Length: 357
Image (tube, rainbow, N blue to C red; front, side):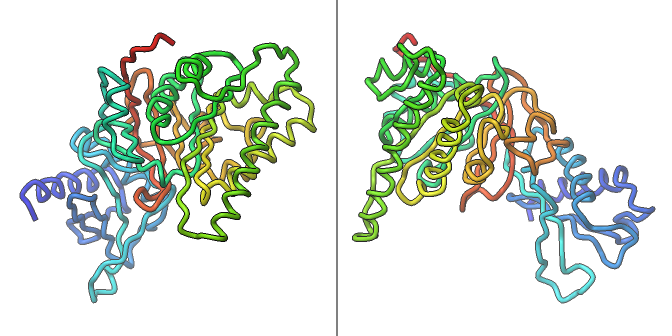
């Protein structure tokens, strides 16, 4: 073990001894130990003990260690206690609480020319921060939430610049705002209320477009049945201001809309058809539970507290997370084979573009 991790272990042990208040049990009485490496650290309790090893203890340790390790490491928030078995014959220390981390803190990408930047990316590569990227091929569906002025539109625009070179993009923009102008600049399919003044009629036109994508899913499923090795082009369905789109409309039209979204969410994964949904919040009026459960890239921008994340990240207690400040700051959770169900701080990219949108 390197000297750095020995020092980190010492600092963690000292802080936990002072702050945990474990019924007068400390590392000095051999109640617990700490081990650290590049991937995170282990809190190893010696059991039986006078304290309970549970999610509450996990949360306390997280809060202490998160502040202590900032800015050297960013601890990755878990939905509950993360247990890890220990390779030891000693029954008393055969389990540990695991706290994964990444080196450094959230670092914003600053891009001088977004068009050139997009062309330079490897296939499926989607940089989110200077030290964090994802494989879009492993993202089923994506949601971006945040109040007005939080940076949702800017982050969506950044994604559009990259996604248009990865696959086909169709945009629904009920406010005729920046996404509409982007679609015009790059000649992308667009559904927007140009001549429609009735919200029911507009949502019905959105339903017609979604229905065509459902037909595409069924067609691709049939092709996969004939040839399981078939590779399809990625297809991204972008819906901006989801809550505004579905509020105050006829129940039958809204139910049809939610049903189509649910079908695409459930069946789109294997056929490379993705939803990208943007809304101030994702409550039951904006999105059904069945659709929300299929989202595996979740972005919450703006003010972060347990209330604001309650719809998009309902199982996450945000206490203890060191949240960055500024426009485009928040949290991100990616649930795939490379990113376990963990939440980390986010700073969305800033960029310059040739187009005036």
